[in-house]
Image 1 (cartoon, rainbow, N blue to C red):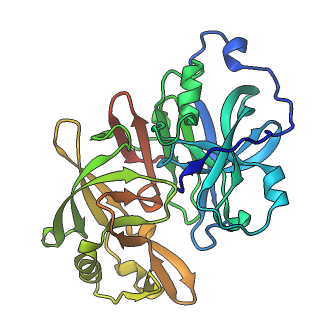
Image 2: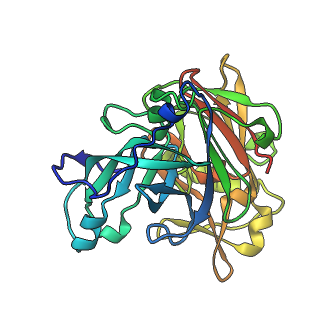
Image 3: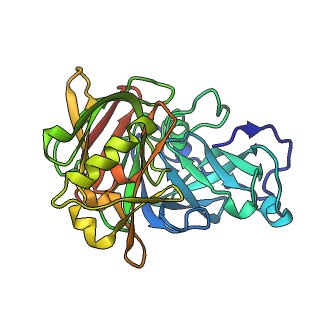
Length: 344
């Protein structure tokens, strides 16, 4: 995400309803449930983005569900309809107090950042439902969970997120808690080792079932629904790609074209799973498996893409492939992330 810039603009000319849940239901602590679907967009026309469809100031909006970001921001319609291509160097936001409908007839006023400038074509801007706790970089913009917890609408800043394993996955967000009925089994917990970035500690990666394809790698890692891929430091690129081609049912070939890793779709059944080893609450090693079905994406003709990439970053990133078919419970106060298979 590009850095934000100060902007002195007039906010949406819409009157917000003065109906705060804290006033309507004094002292009530409950969870807020939001449905999530996956759709292709102008930003991502290859991989679908997880979207939450909400109402803000009476207007229907689709927000990208982003566990790796903290800001809640929408697009200022007046700006969007007025400008063409521009080449600024950052995203400009300005604060707006708007009314959010939370379902079941409940609504509350929250602080939103409205996008009033962007470094590329306005058609490529997005609205974000940031779930991670806000950092200094994003203040005064706070996540939706932080704002609802401050109003005592939900008990704390924790949230759950879960998806089925379908190609265009659907699922939900639970702000302020968890739902055991959506969990296939008991939660296993990863330890949060960095409060600001919500990093966990990665200790290794095994490709397939054979321990000979185990790589010991120690990096911080973050869970990010806003990313379509699993990202690993590029020093491991050759070894990971080699193991992927060898560790499945049959050997197959991966070809690289324009930063895409392509296989024949007929080889999809030969792609092995990825099992990451992540540090638990007591220093124990907890397994996180990414299924072959989550790694492979049908592209064009007989070409399928592998949803894995490599970069210079010292932090690994668990994007959407790590969420498909899974349930996560993020608890910043407990410094933990619970994980199990989703039951949908």
